[in-house]
Image (tube, rainbow, N blue to C red; front, side, top):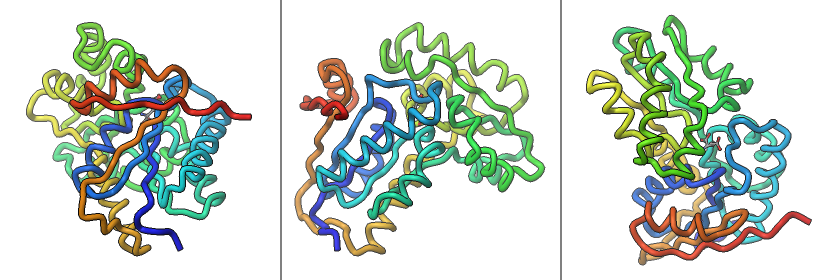
Amino acid sequence: MMSSSLPIGIFDSGIGGLSVLHHIRDLLPSEDLIYVSDRDNLPYGSKESRFILERSKYIVEFLIEQKVKAIVIACNTATAVAVSHLRNSYPLPIIGMEPGVKPATANSQNGVIGVLATEGTLVSGKFQSLVQQHANGTDIFYCPCHGWVEAIEHNGATHGKTVELVEQSLKPVLEKGVDTLVLGCTHYPFVKDTIEKVAGSSVTIIDTGRAVARQLQRRLSDEEILSSNPDTGQQRYWCSGSPEKTQKLIAKIQGQPCIVNRLPLPD
Ligand code: DGL
């Protein structure tokens, strides 16, 4: 039996998963959190499945060594590729995420939606079956958002070049007349303001970060391992490669200084 006082592990290829951590912090303030950014290996979206699976296994094993009680894959791409394997291999709750196709089709008035996600997510079998299951009668247009993750990580979400890239990439999908856009990558909430501005107020934007935090809460409650700590939980950060840039980025996003440790290299 896991102890309720253990931390929750969260990982992504980079800072994208912080958009999910934010909802977890909000919903479960007393939980201790360990966040891993695999910055040295991003973007996952254009990498081979085998590589993403190897990295996901490595990070999950690292988190298990840190004695986490549950893991959130705060990355749509890694979930699409690795979640089944990880769930079959490790005996702790593993929460994944997927683009919000289901809520988007339910929300759409005109039956035309757009899905913004990485190439890796869009071509995955898991995503294809999600679409088959929920898209009945809805026209879905896809935007693989090439370069967004690198732009957000390296230039910043509000940098002129990032804004221009987002605007340009969205044009073809907006021209299809979508009334709902799915943010199918955890990096994209960081450019939500730009998306909203380009798409206009008639387009609804769907982000599944909150739903993932709720799913985590349900799982911890079912397993009776929700933290009973009366104080606010601690956050610890790890990343691959040099921690300096990640430390600056996370401090900027979280609005407070933080220490990022270097993830040990695989043997
Ligand atoms: N943030 C990730 C996702 O949700 C991965 C982005 C990437 O590294 O390509 O898909």
